[in-house]
Length: 190
Ligand code: GRF
Image 1 (cartoon, rainbow, N blue to C red):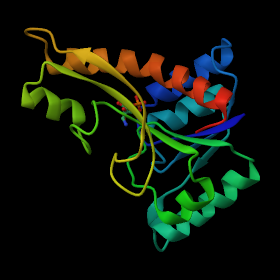
Image 2: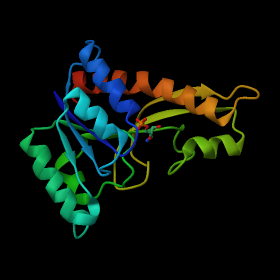
Image 3: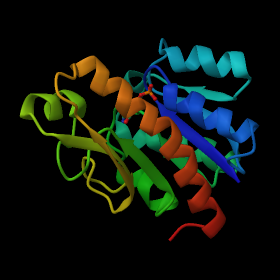
Image 4: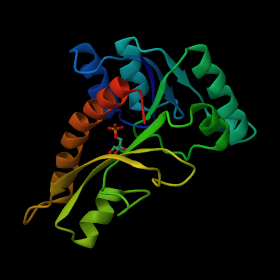
């Protein structure tokens, strides 16, 4: 099974998934890293690991349709089975959704449908909720709206700081994403 990870930032989930493929918890190959931010940390990590990359600057294309058509070409050339979004900070459009229907998943740092969109951890923290968590879901045209695949709760303990919440959420993400991918891959999707 070949997966492409799409990321725009640090890539801690990229790291966790690559690690899982190396230690046998995930029967897949990270065959491609797609990144829309040429200077992102995750690109350096991929280069160090030897993960093939497709790094692009959306500004070099006329519109989303144009760069997504290019992405489809690259993904099909690499015979990618699953697209795994890990901090890819863009909505996926029709051009990419259609050929990969049911094969694109995302991780979001809240219990959806609470706190979709940007800075979900900050939103949860400000709202003063006692429980937040992590959601893995199929991607559709909306913002964090697709069918939910897996969720795990994280408690906000008394006096917990925003940074501590972020750390707790990331720790859950790094286990839940590889484990959920393994389930999806072995059952071939839903
Ligand atoms: C994660 O918190 C993920 O839930 C969100 O973006 C963040 C990406 O972090 N969608 P990283 O780049 O994997 O460290």
